[in-house]
Length: 384
Ligand SMILES: Cc1cc2nc3c(=O)[nH]c(=O)nc-3n(C[C@H](O)[C@H](O)[C@H](O)COP(=O)(O)OP(=O)(O)OC[C@H]3O[C@@H](n4cnc5c(N)ncnc54)[C@H](O)[C@@H]3O)c2cc1C
Image (cartoon, rainbow, N blue to C red; front, side, top):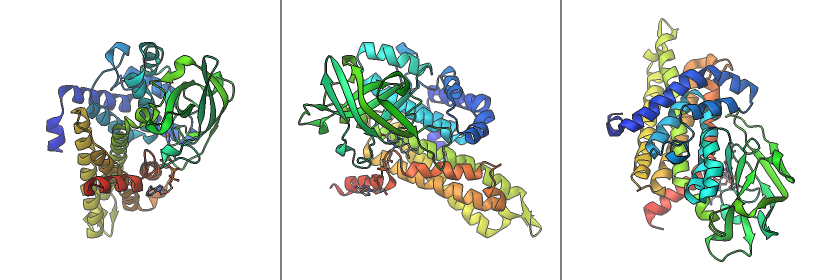
């Protein structure tokens, strides 16, 4: 990885070291317990804050590091090697905090950013709805401006950290709907426990166990005038303004999960003997290892190419979409074949191989499916 390694700043390396320390001190000892209990690891999120990992991209005045996007990707990649669920929870939290930093008033930044960076409050972005997934322009949730506040009504699907979050960024239509910007706005809603009419139902998923995602129903949820983030009609810009970063962050998580699976499989191929020799001596296994290794390198280079361009203020959708779908595919390919190299043991629940495989699957769906990423790349490549 000479190209990536040589391009890192001192600060990038420091953040990566912090993430590595967090992983060995906190995440690794807890990863299996998080998996088996499926409980949201709030204490691990608080610990992430102690290692300065919840405010990597956020302003120093609120306790953040104000570091660049390469630092963020290095950190989540490290964390994903130990726990996809912790990395995904941090990702969901980060992409709820960033819009507040970018569009919030001074009062909103003071109210939310400090506790979010300190891990005292968890954030969640609620964009997707039952009828609006890949086409987020078809949102139906409404926010009625009434009596010096807003009244939210509608249904939101999924939403990483929804339900355990203390602040939800709800993308909704405010009447009268402005002509431009797809007519949506972002409202800050508190924990479902702290306001009437906000119900949350957690869903059970194949992987990323311990992270919390589910369906939110808002039935006349009243929030104050100061809950509006940015301006009325700016919602699409707010929600999609960080999309290149979010997709690249998910690519870094995929790279991390794939790296963990690859390291274990390569180690096992050298140790496990069958027919009088290590299984890694068989050409069929070597073909798997070579393909896994090459795909992993490609995923990491595309991810850090996108991350470095974002850090330089030159991020673009073609790069982030390419990184996302290649890294998602790589994570699935490498984790599946790592299980294959492990043989029957790869299928056992007491080893993390099958967890890596289940965790990897979600990456080709969230933050825009691989089909959407490919359409985006093709459109840009063809100038359509
Ligand atoms: C664990 C988890 C966490 C999530 N976290 C969040 C979150 O934090 N915030 C949030 O708002 N949402 C979140 N989501 C929602 C996620 O982003 C959506 O599930 C995703 O965008 C796909 O939308 P959908 O499920 O409605 O699928 P659909 O849009 O219904 O897609 C179904 C299929 O059709 C294909 N398809 C649809 N439209 C097109 C098209 N135009 N071209 C080609 N193919 C197309 C898709 O690729 C897919 O294969 C999360 C989902 C999960 C499962």
